[in-house]
Length: 171
Length: 338
Ligand SMILES: Cc1cc2nc3c(=O)[nH]c(=O)nc-3n(C[C@H](O)[C@H](O)[C@H](O)COP(=O)(O)OP(=O)(O)OC[C@H]3O[C@@H](n4cnc5c(N)ncnc54)[C@H](O)[C@@H]3O)c2cc1C
Ligand code: SF4
Ligand code: FES
Ligand code: FES
Image (cartoon, rainbow over all chains, first blue to last red; front, side, top):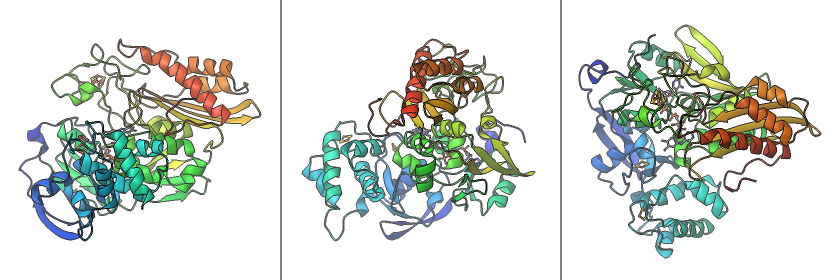
């Protein structure tokens, strides 16, 4: 086979591909969508399901603002396609509270004033939920290392670590 | 994003059948590199063939006493697998020093091998780049080349391979299992990635119609004396400027076997038989480590902004060998280099 390198748009494709049906389970509710194949999970959540709690920071895997849980594991929703997650259980920040009670991490972020502008916060909280489920971090240094995929441009890191430690102790 | 079609592969046979029908189609596994590159218009596939659901997710012992890792095993699962943690801790640490936990949860073992360079100009479609557009020129040679290669470069390209995992795999002498239209074959990790030469558009010797099914680790994991040291611009979530995988087998203080691979410095993980041979039968001390570093960096050449990498690599090699010899591998979370 030859190595085509980067193809020109014309060479790549004859006609604009059709939209495709995708069924997700988002925050324990079925969500049926019809999306263009190149729709990321992040865009599906925000633009198709109006779940705007999940933020778009960089759209390139470099900031963590788009972190959601897929089958309980934290991922960057900007670097996966909605179609690739067919049938998966997605949890966003909107799905963390239970029966009107804040999730322990949400409460801890309030208790510790763990945000300033708040743009990174939903990603931080979802990421921390994934971190706690993984059970690999105990010390503050380990939390910092395993939370390094979530950038906070306001620099609220010390309070974020304190909030996560509180939630970890109570979980 | 530029439009593309999306299909799913039902099994490995279906995947290679699908890719054979369309030269502009690409496999997608974790998506963490390919989707990024499509967004930047660096890659423009006509179709993505989703292989992420293929049943290539097991980690199994081989009859040779090694381990066979399915191509779809996520990087995080591999790093935290008890057999890998116990027998191949250098691989576990190399993986955990890369990217972020979110990305490691998504990234696949096969995709990690095939991630493309982070050369700034490769990403910037407004500039010439031989890797992206063969024959257009290399913007990095006379440009901002701080992150570029110092070894094995060519006039056409001075890009580095950015993977951490592959540096450990090179030191462990892993074997890549692939299947294509002509059947299955194996490729030694040393022969998998290529030097740029005058075809920098080709990163590896995998054919575009082949699929990686697994990575095989030989029995030897060097779990007693190893270290993976990664030097970067920030303490986490950044690519290596220089990284070193060092593994030793010691008899008292004498080196019986040595493996040494560098990351962040070349188009592939960098090894040298001369450097490893220079360590054999020697006392594990600074004199021997310095000799090995000289051999490993033999012919190293800076391009201006990256001249510092030569000295940095030399010190990193010596430090990593010392950590390995002492049995005190570099910690992932404690960032002090001791
Ligand atoms: C912000 C950021 C930081 C990062 N930092 C680091 C770092 O510090 N260290 C590091 O090592 N990595 C780092 N990475 C890179 C990351 O490790 C890779 O993107 C990842 O390993 C790629 O795997 P994937 O499964 O997501 O690949 P994909 O994006 O799915 O695929 C990559 C390529 O491989 C092909 N492919 C995938 N699987 C197969 C297969 N089985 N057979 C044949 N072809 C296949 C695809 O067609 C595509 O061309 C970083 C990435 C990001 C976004
Ligand atoms: S070093 Fe390679 S990837 Fe970078 S600009 Fe030159 S040709 Fe392109
Ligand atoms: S928006 Fe996904 S990581 Fe920044
Ligand atoms: S609170 Fe502003 S970015 Fe984190």
